[in-house]
Image 1 (tube, rainbow, N blue to C red):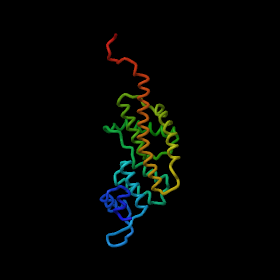
Image 2: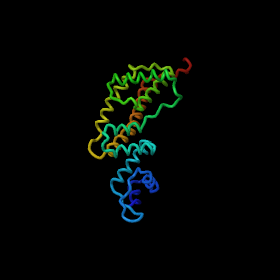
Image 3: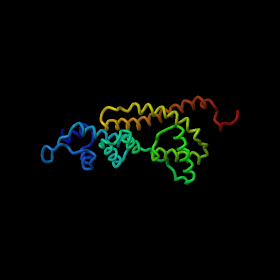
Length: 220
């Protein structure tokens, strides 16, 4: 197919397709004549993966390039490839000022202890470690009593969910398809998980509080 057809089928605008070509995110087509090239299914799949990384994953093009380079490195083990994609996805830090070093150090130690008690094989540079430590500091600044024991129930709940999610990643197919599955599954199911939690919270709030009088209501 020609570049205009590739744009139409992929639903990526022609200027954007040309930009990806210039940036090296999309491989050149097979030259057929001067200023004319043919594109195939591999180009279409790569475009759809780029869209998943940018539109669903919210990745910057620099990070997209790093993920695509990892996909194209056939010597990179699949676990390391998925790590590149997952680390590119974040999560970002909790908003707020940087906590004092001693508080941050204590929270980091708690995260290390949690990971150890769960028996998780997690890289020391995993972004989620920093995010969790920042969240712990934030809660403690608000007066919450956050401990490793208290976090364990959350960790045990998500451990089973994560095991099922990783088990669903297909081992067959291209490396790009595997990454796309992981990216879409991670981002979309995080949204699903958050929505389900809020629905459940509303339900349990209604059961506990809906029929109680307001705390500010005058005594009868």
